[in-house]
Image (cartoon, rainbow, N blue to C red):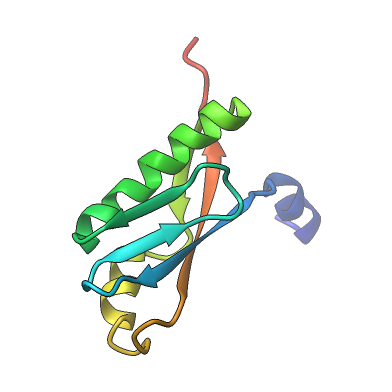
Length: 106
C-alpha cells in the first residue's frame, strides 16, 4: 500500500479540546469552548471523567445533528490521575477527543 492510498483511506477527524480546572474543594471542572453548552463540575473526579463522552455525544447530536461516537485521543482517566501528580494546583490541564460518524442501521 503506497502513501497515496493510505492518505485516501484516512478520513479527517475533528479534534475537541476539553479543559480541566481544579476546584478548591478538590473536585474537578471541565469546559469546552468547541461545543456550546459543555460544562461539567463535580466533587467526584471519576464521575466527571465518565460523563465527558456521553455529554459530548449528546451535545454534538442536539447542537449539530451529528450521530457520532466520541473517543479520547489519549486515555483521560490515566492522564488525569497520573499527570495530576505533576500538574500544580490551580493550573489548567486539557484532554483532546475526536469522533467517528455512526453507521446507519440498514
